Length: 422
Image (cartoon, rainbow, N blue to C red):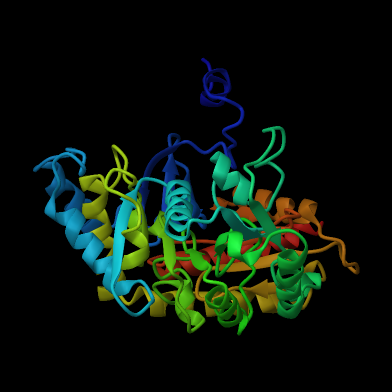
């Protein structure tokens, strides 16, 4: 009998990478069962998508109720109230004073693409500044903005023009906030006049880049520079959004607001939906028809998003994210006492990571990180690696994970790290 892996290899492009060979049969909260009945603890959450857990009852109920009414009309053809209501909620919730407006899309990359479209249209400028290590999607504009070559840019030909990259402040790797901003000043002097820059896009915590958080004060200084030159600030909250960092949005940690905020992943609780929310005057710049998409703001996904926001509020998931992250980081700190490969433990809320070097050196060790991931998988714990050097393990378990399952996962994690040393 042909295995599922063989069928996958024969049928699906190898460009669609797979972290595991687990074929899901069912899932509940923080657990997944495969077709053979094996149970796994999920510390990936679909890459920060099911922050409210797999199949949260309130999300399922909301989708079923909408399913009984209608599944699709295309909002641009026949609109519907729950799209309007979700936009109203996000306009209230996204950081920033003054009137805001929202437009819905389907993927995070699509939200980023449209934020750039809006910024360019509003400013009449073309230049976009992003950061090394940032991740903004796999579309041509998305990968042009992304600051990581392998596997996202390699072999795909010339990137889109008028995209410029700065070093992201990262104390562990020797880049201070002052140095990052000095690089911006040099960019303005040597490569692009600030009057040609439409926007600066930044993740408050880099996702794929390694879970590095923007240091205190950096966003304020970036905001000041944007205001000085009439540049828009875009916060890419696709991975950081919806309680993951201990706040509904990570920009809330920094005391300033972006002009445009992109979001996706955790908003839909497992259904595909993304959004751009921003200053009303900026969002209204494109003419009717300039924004949208056939599936943008699908009514089933919108219903799920309403339920997700209700669950986050009613179950106190921002506070729970902070508690879970504290427990995880404390456990990792204890493990680090006997594991010299651990060089950093970090992350706000429950957006946490551990970074590994070769023991006794400053050389990043992707091999050790991957061994930890493989050892965990043998013990039925799903982990993800990340980082420009591939030497970081990121932790993205659902914020609703049961305490007993969380404790079980921490024990497996410790065993896996120790096993990776042998």
